[in-house]
Image 1 (cartoon, rainbow over the protein chains, first blue to last red):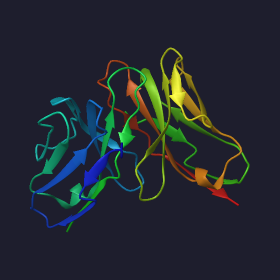
Image 2 (cartoon, each protein chain N blue to C red; image 1 turned 90 degrees about the vertical axis):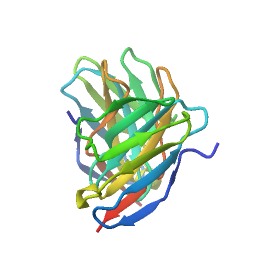
Image 3 (cartoon, helix red, strand yellow; image 1 turned 90 degrees about the horizontal axis):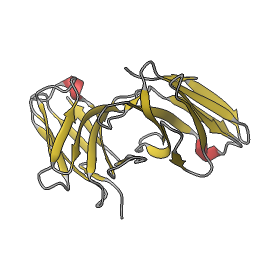
Length: 114
Length: 111
């Protein structure tokens, strides 16, 4: 088990372009979360999946953001028409189902929108 | 609503103790503690559940006051490796397992 992995680790894009990030969770984990983190702040919840079902999405999440987990394994997060305010670290985490769970985070994808 | 962490920053000498606090205005189901070093992912330290169950690293201790919706993380005999930013993440009762994180406590341990 190599933990949660994310690709790419860094992404620089121009404003208005679309970007897609990938997250591979720990293999036996059913739950997968996306967070966004800006400098000096804690991670901010974006959305989460249980298996392939997207069960919750932050009210703060713009409709330019979409996430999928088609086979209940890896997940993708797409940002359309990027804006400079989207620049942040995008973190993925996974956990097992049930009480007493803990979320394990991946290394993140740092997005810079120029 | 975001939980409030205190202090915002603390500087220790190796071997000293520290307490980091996390307070919420909402009823909580659980509190999670993570440590993040610069440029790295948050690392799980401890989870404390309503009802008293807790799980985490052996060298880390924490408490959860359900009546006050407050949690404290106790770092004893600090080591240089303890340096980093500590975040508490709170899960509200009835929510769908999403965590709301505080803005962090920056801990620096000096030799």
